[in-house]
Figure 1: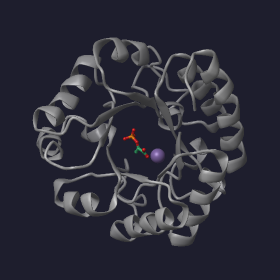
Figure 2 (figure 1 turned 180 degrees about the horizontal axis):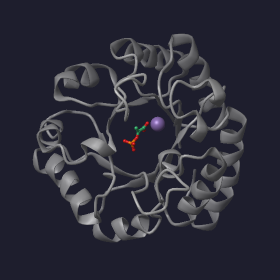
Figure 3 (figure 1 turned 90 degrees about the vertical axis):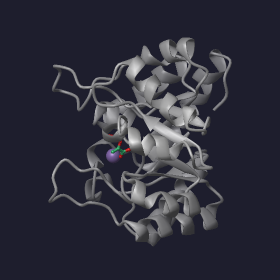
Figure 4 (figure 1 turned 180 degrees about the vertical axis):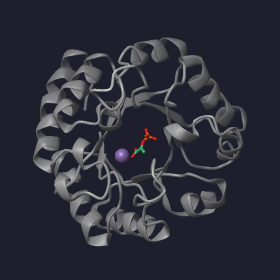
Length: 241
Ligand code: PEP
Ligand code: MN
């Protein structure tokens, strides 16, 4: 289970949340430093400063770090500092970026595009692998449908389907999938029951004050109890958390 804020908001903040993610049983820290925001006037992320704050959090807690890479000009920065490179939903078919990530010595977390079919998603993974990097993890994060009550619609069946079509691990991001922290636990438990290989969850000490995606972020205590419950479900389906 990966946990952490949508966006890095400073060194003290990310170090504090990293410790809470670790105490809850999380094994990796997430934090966006380059943010693909719908509005150009919304907070765009702390950039390099955010990545370096993540590095500090790793030094303090030992947790490896994952962050989103938006453009090829930052590849060197990410290879130097980040353990797992996230390609966001909006870049899933940025084929030039995918080809370049095929040449780096870092695993890639490839999110499903907003309206990508399984085949399109797997072909994007193929772009990375065909260029030489076979360490790809897929991430279901919900897709666009006619439903507007939730931010996206969680396509849970993608988990068993992708596992049938591919050998790649698949994890769930219930935070982007639902857009609502109240749905995050139920969808996480359902994904574990469906055989997901992991979860990536937005966690914030003060969701009301978060600089992005507060409405879908869990407080640390809720994240800890989710992991607790998830362990029971994982055991039933013969997995561990
Ligand atoms: C995120 O993880 O904060 C994010 C922007 O994800 P996605 O690319 O799935 O929308
Ligand atoms: Mn987010």
